[in-house]
Image 1 (cartoon, helix red, strand yellow):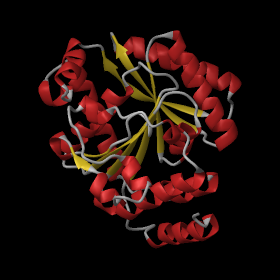
Image 2 (cartoon, rainbow, N blue to C red; image 1 turned 90 degrees about the vertical axis):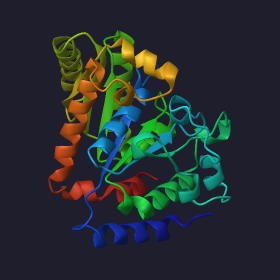
Image 3 (cartoon, rainbow, N blue to C red; image 1 turned 180 degrees about the vertical axis):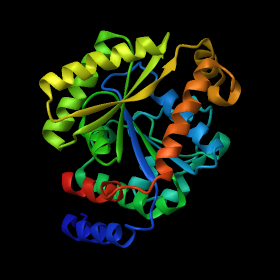
Length: 288
């Protein structure tokens, strides 16, 4: 059993020592519900960032159900359970995907991994912290819903990106996730990305609706507009081909949107990070 007090002091020391030198960004992409294109968006965003020379590690944080490796048409030899069981190091489990992105794959259909113990989550984050100097971006692709794994990995990020569509059920679930994270985990800042829209005006309409609800019922929450991704037939085509659409169809509408998003995140990361953005893993220890 990991001693949480000892680990907390260790991680606090690591953050303090690296406060002025580390400039990596940790993003968690979540949605509250499935079927909104989250994993596909994460994969393509990672690819777009890598094409800008950024070193990206994607963590398939839907721990018990692997998706990213399937989406990429890859069959990694090891999965996250091999690290959690102590059989393999985290470096041995991580594999390289298209464009040089690195992926820590989830496991396939292992129910006990859907609700990790706190000490197990802390051990995983400590290892990610250890290797984080090798990356510019670390992206958690969470599962759907408001499970303990989802809320934990959201709490461990610098930026929580919530993905929504035009469907009312998507809005309801995004709101529910914001409510849980703000009231139980003290998360107050969220960024909204709207997927599968026909125009930016449609995306802004979704943002304005969710922002109005948040202002009314979650007064201490800040919801920022991050951008949108247009509906595009190349997205489903690329899924069938098991390749990122940014790679296969670089001049498509969807690719243009994802490239704009990657440019925005790239420029934000170039700015010296604030103190709160240095405390990624220390924040997660407090919630553990």
